[in-house]
Image (cartoon, rainbow, N blue to C red; front, side, top):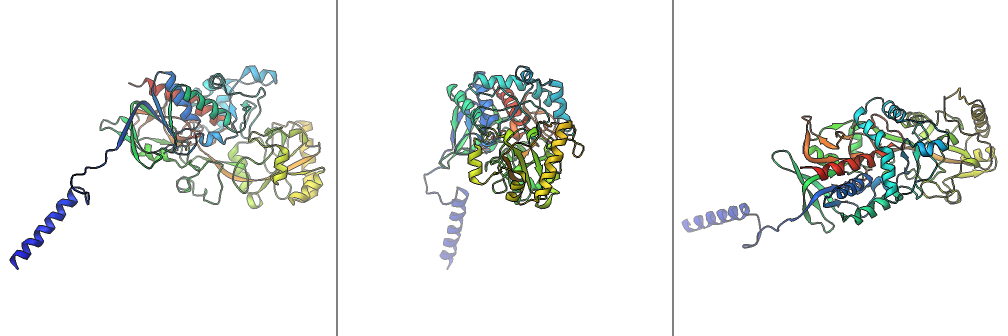
Amino acid sequence: MHRKKWGSLFLVLALVAVLALGGCQPAGESEPEVETREADVVVIGGGGAGLAAAVTAADHGAEVILLEKMPRLGGNTLISGCAYNAVDPERQSKQGIEDSIDLHFQHTYEGGDKKGDPELIRVLVENALDGLHWLESLGCEFKDEVYTVLGALWPRSHTNVKPLGTGYIEALENAARERGVEILLETKAEELVQEEDGRVTGVKAVDADGKEVIFKARKGVVLATGGFSANVEMRTKYNPRLTAEIPTTNHPGATGDGIVMAEKVGAEFVGMEYIQLLPTGDPETGSLAGWLAPGVDQMIYVNKEGKRFVAEDERRDVMTNALFEQPDALMYVVSDANSVWEVTSFGETEEQLVEMGKVQKADTLEELAEKINVPPENLVETVAKYNEAVENNHDPEFGKKLLGHKIETPPFYASPRVPTVHHTMGGVKIDTLARVISKDGNPIPGLYAAGEVTGGIHGTNRLGGNAIADIIVFGRIAGESAANSK
Ligand code: ADP
């Protein structure tokens, strides 16, 4: 009896000891060591901002590792409409367009309801053209003509020769590889490594085999993880209206991982509630593809009643809010034969779009109205009124200013569009050197950020075409700052 009692006590003590020493591990085996890699600069995210940062850091002598969680590079940059805003006297003067850096500043600042940081906006508008020339030097080709992309407010949008954002990503990826940047796909950053003194010195990630790897950064970490439009939980936290029913233009990896990681190291955030929607989403996919994409001066929007309801050259938020007020929040983009691009910026031709049923085509407006099921007499009247506005260069109904040409040359086109979540303008606070600012107002040593993960540039409403300029300008700055970090 006595011996049995001692025996049980011994067993309990042994069990406690085993648990304290690490559970059920067989004796003699220690914890598997976590693999550690090291570089001067570790970039998280392989979209436009991350690649621009990686290339620039390498140009400043840094050994760079870039982590990308998806199986391919590109992020939202790759699937973007690729418009790049820059005041470009060389191109614009050929089209008789007057522009200035100050006007670009004013459009950006006021177009964002003066909620953007004027210092960051200055950096953006003053360096946009240099960023464009830098891309050209890396082999990225732009078309000669500039135009006004949706919500750009002025004809200073440049477009690539290649479709979507492929031109940017190809050129940047080639440049990164030529400079010896190590690109690791399917490698997801999970956490920033922060020392007791606050310095960020690395990244904990999970590699393609599901193994944890610690990437130590001798100089700096660049956060370039993009936005959170594809994370319904996160976006509804900041704007409860943006439920799962509203589609998004974004790639599935736009889940705001950088926001979560930055929060844990004490970063400050700005403008998280400013989430941009576009009125031009594909009703099935939310994508911006699937319609003939002329400049805003070459088309009108009509609702299911065949009536216009907003100036088509308005700010993106104004147009989307107006669309939410229309029956079923559905509209049609209507244009004519004069507004057909040979190939849209999404790489689609008129023929393909018509064949896929994404775009309806007809020889008369009446026929077009029948096809999209809107009252023909309304559509005819709407277009007549619009043409009168073009003729008088005055749109008394909606105040559209960019009145390019009449809609009068058959065939006519229409494609249905709905509101779609596009861009998260808020994010981590940075300064003009792309240093991440902490809640106490000081830069977090060793941590830099660029691109959609940052906030404070676009205010409440981003101008169309400003995002690509932003990611290139601040991506380059972040890369340089990280490479030069002590
Ligand atoms: P930006 O325009 O700011 O460059 P993108 O959306 O183009 O933004 O690119 C961001 C990239 O970051 C995407 O390719 C995305 O898959 C990647 N990314 C997001 N979260 C992580 C993460 N946790 N680890 C590694 N890559 C990430």
